Image (cartoon, rainbow, N blue to C red; front, side):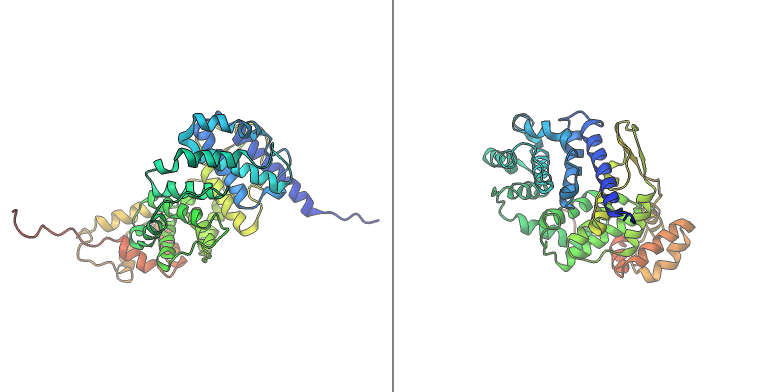
Length: 371
């Protein structure tokens, strides 16, 4: 009798082993439990696993290191209430991952729902100063049916996203805020975020900045946001990110306090939106796993300096990419010019992007004399 080899089952087991090893490392071997870094890393990992539908394929023992945290969350959140969004996120994702995988942490309903109701009664979201944090809190509470309204919040979020020209300027904080707004409005890919054409344009502009800066973290977030918005992702961006991910160094027992874990997480998240199976690549178990991305120089700083330090400081030259293309490429190294050409060829919006990025002009002198 011929034995039939079941390669899909073998790949599943290997993926489960890798996911289990990663969860155990993040939960047990990198930071002390309850520290803000521990909360942040575990919240991000579980969020990606839950958002990519990994629950049904997780091994039964994968979430065991987080069981004590989950069962003690009522007391811990009462004490560490400034971190309520981390607690809500971790507990909700644990419950949903466990439920979809067919195994229990304790009881299915109660802990996360109770935490959400307590957060709403205590008014913790109302103490936030940032609309982005309000949007995250609102999204989390809604997951357990708890209403939390902020008058005008949706309008302000969309107004921020639609100011496309501001996203042509190097500002990582604004770029990350843009992608996270899309994550929250889309419920992490579960519903249409109803983005306008200008908001889509904003994502493309942030992606161009990230590519020029060789910022794999932000570029991957932009690509995920575009997918959640139902928009096309430039193939050159995803190809570059895939090559970048393949060069990552993942070391067993190599964690020394700081690494590139978030870059790795987000790129795996993007890969899972295309092929499924987040964090299924082979990963050695044991100890504090560390992640190190390849060092890849960008062209963003050189391009900005070239424009600003030109003979006229950019004033009066205009911001026409077609007219300046040859002189700018000539002022860059071969590698820098190649990267700029890659960005140019990745989207038909590069000329519009450059018009705002060049910032050709200056602030006029004050008209009129003093009163």
